[in-house]
Image (cartoon, rainbow, N blue to C red; front, side):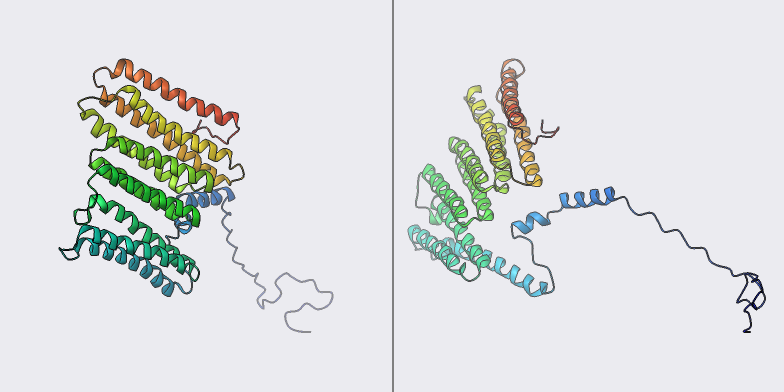
Length: 363
């Protein structure tokens, strides 16, 4: 019989294995913490995704690369973009700082030729490296817009004496960039074209061409709406919403109240409420034609619509209040509120009639 083991028939005392017969002492296990509720984890993930700019930057190819070969890829990513910016700046300085005895026409043609060459070279590069070629083409298009701007706006390259013609050339360049973006299906170039269009509006405002500013703001909103409906690009639409209402806010606060003949209430309401109706109609038609889009895209589209109507109420109130400071509390503001409420209410009714997914805040 081995020591410590009970003989057959002997009842174990329960302290086997201990020579002195003392009971074993076991350390009690600590209770594991309860698992986190799944709802809290999911909510945190949604909040992180909602407030992260990474998905947007990735779609616009503005996020540097990551991964195992991130060092080499990051260097090439920055070098190509910085080199392109330096090349465009060098072409600008070539046109402005070239020898003093060079006529403005030669300067303008030189910079325009560089812009055309860059655009063509980028299109050729797209056959080998699509991303880099598209980047070079975008730089050429931006330089082409600068050429149109310099034809009147920069003295050493000035060949046009009429500012209206200068604005027309810039508008044609901006529309051309947007058309090129639709041909190449590139939302980044479309956004650049819309931004450069607002530069043309600023140019017109600086030269007191307010009617061209109004026309440009409306045309840019319509152009961004066209690409939003046909290509479902929301970034140019968001830029156009902010840009057009920002331009009208400058007119409403800085220009219209200081004119000797204040614009009529009909003109103010036609411009401002016309822009609101235009953007709201674009949003409505775009959603009506995109019933198969995901919930996130629809949510962004709705927030652009909310931004439009909110800015419409604010800018319209500022315009009427500053243009008619004496009588604005009696007649003009009453008409403004009624027309604004009818416009917003009509589109709200249309959305419910077409069964768009409208939440409480948008209603």
